[in-house]
Length: 245
Ligand SMILES: [Zn+2]
Image 1 (cartoon, rainbow, N blue to C red):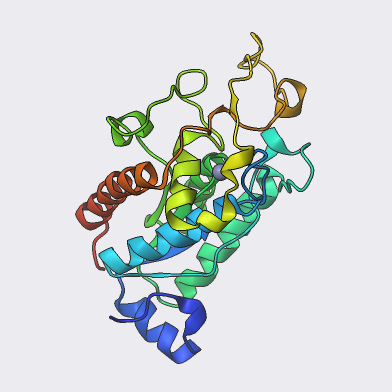
Image 2: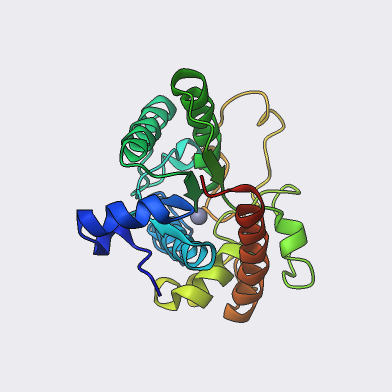
């Protein structure tokens, strides 16, 4: 198979692959608390692993993972590092502008951390408005209910949220079991403050473990099945929409 990881290439090899590949994927992670049972590297592990699988299946190449992100909600937990949104937007824009100059055709911002998606969207819009780039895509976890149907047993937090719970823990058990200690997994559905949607409230004010959902029901098999569904969805999106240019 042709190489997919830019970090393992010389600049000449990378130049050739970036020119011919469908897209260059930038994996976006975070350094963020993931409960008592998973490390702060969790989102980086997912972003790196999934981006590489995507690249292999859709003829893309993948850059080194950016290990810091926008983590405002969890920023007060120890060992959680958050970039300000404007810092993160400028960082993403600089990377994309740099990539374009190296002749890459399309750019995919793939995030293993949900909080990165909003600033990625703003960065992509500004790149379009200011520089004319129309080929910057962004995605992350998607369709949790559909992709987890018949697989995940527990409710999402507050109807649609999750963090370090059944889905994410299951994926880690499947792709990187050494990063999980199930003996420390807990079920925790912190009650959401009634004004949480109308003012900023850091998680530390109302959450204890840092888990939002039930991590105790996670298994590697569930992680494999969810990841298969999610991958199929993303691969279809990429091959249908992202054209060689
Ligand atoms: Zn995470």
